[in-house]
Image (tube, rainbow, N blue to C red; front, side):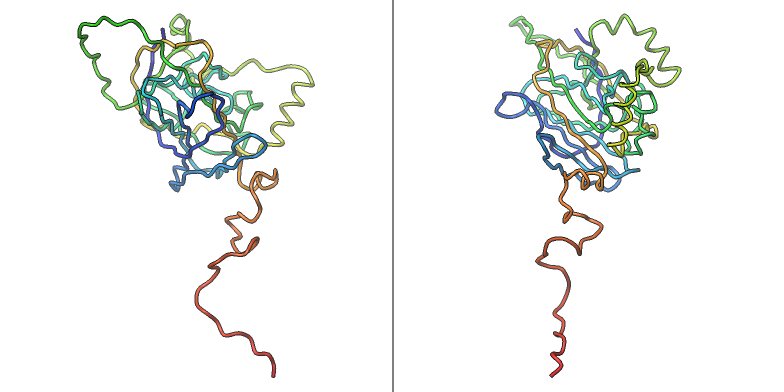
Length: 290
């Protein structure tokens, strides 16, 4: 049994890098640049989906339940659970979406009332790097669980008291209730405690290589009101029914990696492949000198 929490945010871009065997995914994931309102375009590259983030811009992750049943979505940003701050694991807390519901997650959950905004920032300033976990910076992922269908009597049952906010519920992991007191103390002190630092030259070199290849991460931005409520959720299985992973970096890093063709460069529209409408009116041709 899991207690659940409800949250709303603003994001939108469909990413279909998922691993279910369904005709259509249970949940669609999207990312929106909140500063300009753009749905960030995704590019496929070597079996992964990539988006280009703009440093300094806030973003949100949009989750859409495309099924007719409730689902639990565990959201990971840079390898960190966006609700609890723990190093992400599918068995942790997540958000519960009603059938066909869409919601937007704007940031790291700080309490039942607010979040710290997701913002694209230089990698060393990312939340994961600042808490000693830079290895998985540059990845947004979700693990989706279906709900166990419990036996219900045939006679009418009273409807549960509705949440005062139109946000999806958040489910806590097994055993999490027993850790409530310690967790509350940690939250009062600040962010969730970072994972123990890895030791050994090989581990340190791997982390250094990861940081060198990745340019941006997700920072811990300004606080924003984003109320949630709690609900119960029983997972149908211990393994997720769907896993989606979306990679990101800044535009020029994606060009250097070969993810984005250079002719798509938005800052140099005059370069690259020919365009059908490059200018305005018809100009006189140059004189032939005759």
